[in-house]
Image (tube, rainbow, N blue to C red):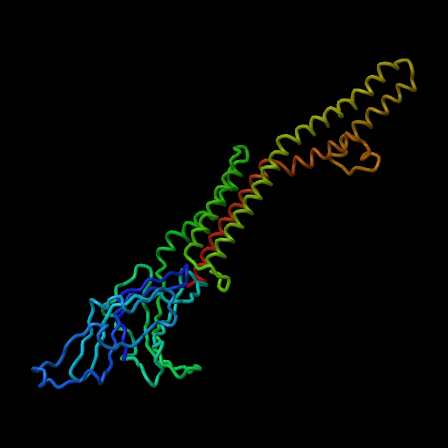
Length: 382
């Protein structure tokens, strides 16, 4: 018979193992250790060291560490009664495999197994069974990151080429305590994602808009690197929290791109449009000065004078058409008219007030969307 008293366990999610510190209690009957108390002065029980009597070779089948069953052989003796009943009570440390599903990290629950059995003796020679259906958790020390939910013990029997073997499968279910990860990982990421929306509200003239966005994006990347240290390196299950952090980095990158576009539009308004306006004004003045020169040089010629008065009104009318009327094919061929029209159209579209309004609307939408995304993410995990 076998029973485990659980003292403490140390899960290692990075290596997908679990280290258990337990009190192993094994009971069996050895017919070669029976005696008559009356022949030995009324002695009904005694103790022997492990090296002095036979003990079963119980080993964890899924062990990944160095399990040493003789670790306390010289310090922890075995108790034997006159009826041949042996009690082996010894503390053991087992590091076993525990395949973890971290899809819902840090709101995940894990189920680990320890299979304990004889390595040399088959079921006909050594048949083991559970003394109880669960662990004795009275000496259990509560873990700071995990909460024990359930334990069980079942007998398992398997047949191999060398015979039929029996083993004990101890199972444990524990749940991760998530408050640490909420405070130190998810909430900081949510705040950084919200702050990345402030990129839209920084004036373009300051020049720190892109630098601020890059800083927030790098902070989100660092947060993702910290999360990776808590999860196993596997491609079978991808934690949803990693997807959340990746989307946060993507959204921060989108805000950075839009801020760059806004800065370029503001630069166009501040540098390109004034040049276009000056060029259009110079062409307009040159067009108005040309008829006046023809007028001063042809005062005695009636036909020339008449031509002057014909050109001057037409020139002024053509300059007004791009701003207020439809430009015909003849007017559109004039460079000064095209420049004037482009100046007016671009000025109305790239005005600073319009750019700031667009930035404000996009920033508000971004902040509201990022907040809703974080809330929906947390609700989906729970």
